[in-house]
Amino acid sequence: MLSVPVMRQVLGDTLRGIGVNEESVSDILLAATEACTNVVLHAGQSARAYTVKATVDNAACRVEVTDAGQGCRTRRAAARRQPGEIGPADHANLAESGRGFAIMRACVDAVTLHSAPGEGTHVVLDKRIHWEAPLARTA
Image (tube, rainbow, N blue to C red; front, side, top):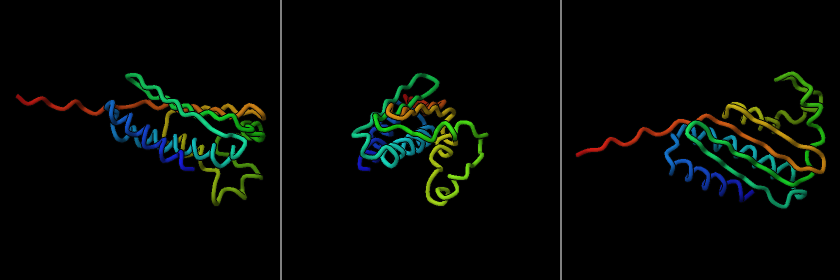
């Protein structure tokens, strides 16, 4: 769990340092925090480590969170559901968890998940970004 705040600090400082505006930075950090927290909580000891890779161009930021854990076994059933539909097994988890992907989707423009038993999990977060206005030069 100690790695999540470190990721937030490094990613946030980097994005701010290159001029990404604070609203974009906040959205990216919240989504990335959820993705990393999911690794820590769900991959557990099966994933000894995970990677966070961020790329930025003039229009967008992509954050990829990858682990080599056991992968998710229940994603196929979830993938067959309609958006927003809750399955019977989800009811017990709603009070305390299960909102991570909804939060990620609310913060970024696209969330892609690939996970399979024995293959680990790869989450891709894509967000259109805005830049801070350049400082006006004074003579």
